[in-house]
Structure formats: C-alpha cells, structure tokens
Image 1 (cartoon, rainbow, N blue to C red):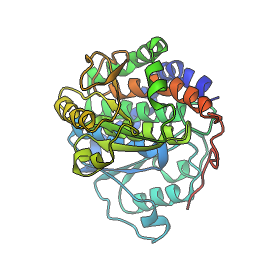
Image 2 (tube, rainbow, N blue to C red; image 1 turned 45 degrees about the vertical axis):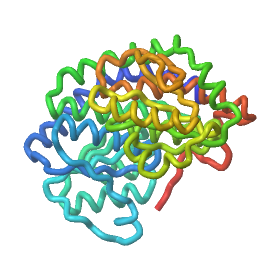
Image 3 (tube, rainbow, N blue to C red; image 1 turned 60 degrees about the vertical axis):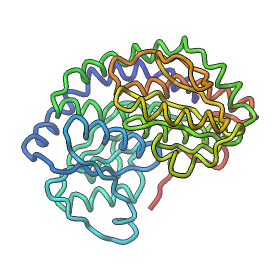
Image 4 (cartoon, rainbow, N blue to C red; image 1 turned 30 degrees about the horizontal axis):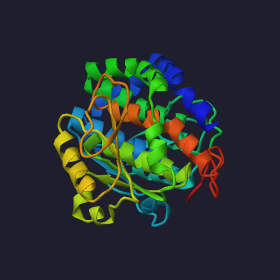
Length: 340
C-alpha cells in the first residue's frame, strides 16, 4: 500500500491541478477583500509539516507572517484567540480530530476567515470552516501518509499561487507530476548502504526545505523505524552537531540559491565529525565525502524539496523490509488518530 499509493501521486496531482482552480476562486476573492495581516495554521503530524511548508511559500510570495496555532489552546484550555484580519488554514487528512475542529471553531469565533484543506468529505473539521477545499487524494490505507501529505502541500501552494498571482509557481505546479514521474529512474541504493544498520539519523535542510526535512524524518521513524532528527542547517551548529558521528548519518536536502552556502557549511561540519552524508540534489557534485542521490529538476526551487522527498519513498519501504518491518503496518500506529 505505501508504495502503490505513492505511485498514484503524479496522476492525482495532475487531476488536482485541473479541478482545484475552480474550488479556489471564491476563497481567493474573499482573501483579496479581507487583505489578511496573518496566516494562522491548524494541523498535526504530516499535515503540520505541510502547513509549515505552505507558510514558508506564503511568506516568500505574499510577505505575510505565518504562525501555527497549538490546538490545545482551544481544546484543553478553552481559550479563543483574537484573530481579526487573519486567515486560519486548517489541514487534515480525515478532518475527524476533535481538537482541530475546536481550534477552527475558536479561530472563526475570534474573527478569522477559516479555510480547510481536507481529504475526507463531510468531516467535523469541514463543518467548522468558512470554506472546505477537497484535496482529492482519494482513499489512503497505508498508515504512513504519502498521497495526503503531497496533495495537502500542493493544494496549499495552488491557493498561495492564485492569491499572490504567482504565475511561475502555478506553471511549475502544473509540471510537477512530470518531475515526480521521472523519480522512477533515481538510483537510491547508496541510501540503503548508508542507512542499513543505523538506528539514528540527521535530516538537514534550510529555509523552505526544512518542513520537508521534518516530514522525511517522520517517515524514517514511521516506516523503517530510525530515530530521525530534522535540523535546520543553522540550528544544527548550535548544539545538535555534538551528536554527529560515523554511526549517525545525515540526509541533506540541497539548498536553493539563497540557502546553499548555509547547507554546505553544515555539511562541512558533519564531514569533519565523521558523519556519513547522503545529499539529495538535482545537480550538485560530490563534496565533503557526500554520496549524491541525483533527483529530477522540479522546475521551481520551492518545489525541489518535494521531488527529493518523493524520490526516497521507495527506499524507505525497502529499508523497512531489510530491517524486518512491514512498511504498510508500522507498529503501535493507527491510520486516523482522533486527538482532543
């Protein structure tokens, strides 16, 4: 299921790109009239990583600050925040978690325009938002999310691109399915050699790629069962680098033109500490002892981390099997967690 569902993503993204603009016309018109001063996000797990990634893109495209709302503010403490001139973006696979629905209700009560990116129709969360937007991932049976994560991200990016009138980003989203299709030719065997037998790993990125690094770290924990530590290339040097060793490899997402030197600096320090390095990149030459997993070009630097993540999905499943785990049934996990 994990691998077969991941294989569906390019075709699902192509269909999403065709139908989503019509769904987004009215929400974007409301956003234009509101002219929000803040984007607040409401999500957990993989959906929270999707929200964080969308927040980076919104900050770069719209110059709006983004803040993640802790669901416990509403669900545990019963507080309603003052969110006048804010838009609250809730992202959920099932829309069934009580705490997310309560947080969306509180955000609406506090004055926010609320939007929900949800996969399941007729959900508790969908009933609490001003606009429910279906991401169109279809049924997802594997416990570790692939389809719903990727389609949540791209739905949010379509929203930002339409709202900001970012035509290059809209064009790149239309081409993204082709880039993901080309990932079938990626040689990820060096990842198997480096990660097999390890119990811990760093996942390192900077800027907009950092939430995708957090999602990759989550998948490493869920599927093959490695304890993974996602780190900003900057924050890595403020303490976590002390954990680097030959027994703790680092998976590095190559930086964009703005963050590249910061990422290279982190790689230099990791190499000096003896940590094996796997670099996910469309074109970098090997340096600092890194083994390069060459991934397809995304056509837009903000989408490149998504291509890198997608290219590693088959490796995660294969690594899980080598470690005696079922990639479709991670221990102690359920598909839908209804937290409060």
